Image: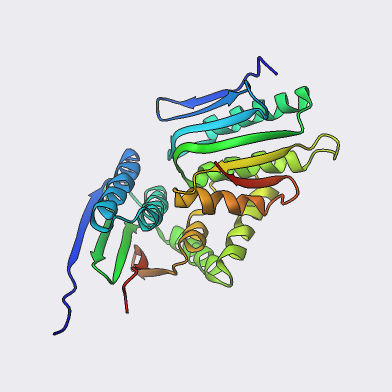
Length: 128
Length: 164
């Protein structure tokens, strides 16, 4: 699939980009998310990505956190909102989200693992 | 001969109007821990805790004129102690007491999941209120809260390997 639109950025500190050269399409989180209100750029970007996943009829995507050095709890809130948006879909529209993490980064293992409990059938963690 | 505990540490204070110092302090704490301990796992946990505690201290400070303060000490072979202090008004203190009691009960993962479920049910509510539950779950350490008049002190102690 090509032409997937999806970009959110907060200055030069953080970016959310979509890599669609390979399957599955990957949403990459880059930089550090530690601002007072990361939802101001994360929420619209993830909403746009969610809409495009539905439009493209994808059944699975990857969310790659290995290039993210930090994610604060306000950023985790944005991820929860994204995951819950996906769980509210009809079964034939639901898509799986694989959360890719670095096993060298403690917060990635623990924070992302906790998110899988929100939607254990569709959200999983995978070491990169 | 009794062993001698060597202590290293730092204290940082800044106005709550300077948000960028929160992340600068987190990065400094992580670097300090890494240099002293050569242990990325514990440095990650301490740094995450410093960020979350400082975020709360800055957000809920009573006034931009009252600095928030972070102190941390590495007691070699024993523990790392992290403390964050801020002044807050009465309603914020009462809200924090209730929140702290809620996240301190029961299994840390269950308490954290309960906070996440609350966000899932009401995603547009202001703030995340995940930070303290996140610290408890992700570090495996208990938090202590002390309130002296209008000063809130949050404390986390991370035991170090080698402690007997």
